[in-house]
Image 1 (cartoon, rainbow, N blue to C red):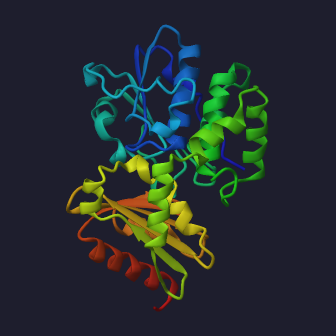
Image 2 (cartoon, one colour; image 1 turned 90 degrees about the vertical axis):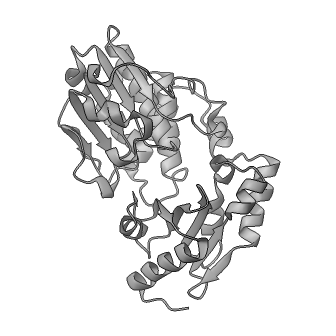
Length: 325
């Protein structure tokens, strides 16, 4: 059962003129769902406050979701005027362009479910690594009588995405109970998941198929690795959103207990995603390289060639498990 918050989010924001809600760089479904849902709720409860949501532009896979245009990608207001800044689904180290507002805010609130952020980084913290998602935590911050279809849609989006559509071990009976209440508001949850979680363009499907076909296995098939090199990334004019779902396709290969996927941010740095069935605690591996996440899903950035990066990750996996080639 998720911990209940020790503070009332509306009370903590009452009287504030300028409130900023934000989340991590490269926002995923949970970051998007939790931040938009909380923004909508606070705007409903505090109509006289200036409440802005600052996150990077969501992936095109979310374009069909009603209300996805609420986030702002820039804000020119002076950061010292921020009365309250609420950071969701991460710590301050992954904030991106909104970091200055969090740093200068008169009151900082951190809401997260990542074990790598167990202490929190705010003046007030609502951290619960046992919760399925930041969106589940936001649900507990909201007065249920104020829930509506739009808020419910985004909370459901966040919970569904961070649980792998209720397949991952972070899905509890409480998570399912909350999801059931949310779909009772009448939005088309099936279409929401189809468009944002499953659907791929033909080009994207071919790209992911190529990644799987060219993947490698290690440790008697228990580790599967796929990647895109810098030259191919540039030649094909690829974008991070093109790889949505690639890591999951590697993870579901029979016998795979840990999947690794990496793509270049530039010629010298790779973005690494890790997924596990639980045998490997990928949050520990990610933490070794300055990243974060959960036992079964984590990620980080690492400088070096693909070969160097893979070798370092495999070394950490073998240390943890004792697996050999």
